[in-house]
Length: 347
Ligand code: AMP
Ligand code: TRP
Picture 1: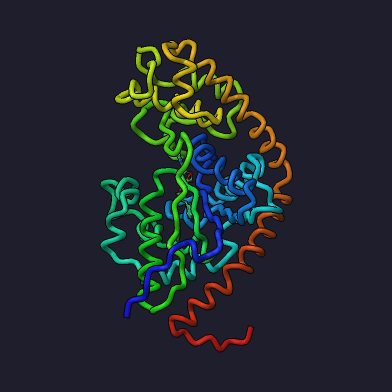
Picture 2: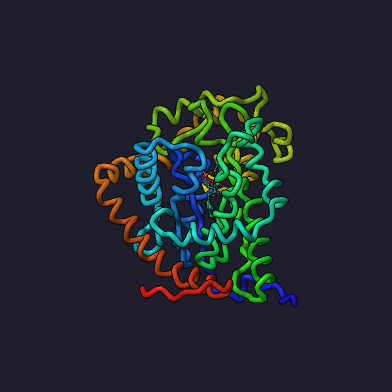
């Protein structure tokens, strides 16, 4: 008995996204995710944002560093424009619905689907016998993060596209297995000029908080001087910027800097190329450095200010968690009902 597949339009629009507090936030997180999170909130859509500490522990985390990174990421969200009164902002481990639904989805997702996840293959590398089981199961927990809220739209960077396809597959299979139209089939929101910000040292690998080289990335905690130096030292080729966008093909480092400029300025890459056609990097890099400092410095100083009061950050996360729980709890309880679990405990 197969039911027609539900389209997201039949569910009220609700945005969910998450970032791992496994290190500091980078310019990649900011342009690929955080900046978009703020825009969605400011459009007046219901927005739920989560610091996914349960995802972070798929690789070992030093407890003191995890605590610090979670608070710092929360400060980064708020400094970048997330308003805890308008968005729900919390850390994942305070809302147990995520892991409960995560287990259920471990039983819905197929080994074959999980084995095709390229991020697992990249992260595990030759070490796949020795990584945690959690790292393998992680995309099922990610689907649970989203579907515990019946979220319909998920803003992410390009690297998360495959995980969102898996989330769609899980929703479709659950609906079909139980003959319901319970979960929405989510829409990825991958928008803007910088959906994949590349390393400043290698235009073919992603800018990442886990890259051993700090020169490869801009951290939201870097001061103005550090940001400038990193951009000026960024790897490039020797050619000036082209007259047209297609001239960036096969020039990954140049393309990356143009995309970063465009995303920071709120322009298209084509506009940036028009403004800087024929410019040498000796001209373009200082302009980019000035722009990056102008856009990022206010965020960095606000983060520093917020970090002076960790108790206030914890309070905000706690309040967000209570609001998140109020949405997710009834959804997960209904899932248990659908699946035939006896629910007779007095609450
Ligand atoms: P993560 O740091 O892996 O938890 O990523 C959190 C969010 O930031 C996800 O939506 C990612 O797609 C996005 N993101 C991470 N790194 C980059 C990058 N280099 N470029 C664009 N988006 C990124
Ligand atoms: N997997 C995402 C990343 O590493 C983080 C994440 C966890 C997430 N749960 C999510 C993103 C739910 C969007 C929605 O970048």
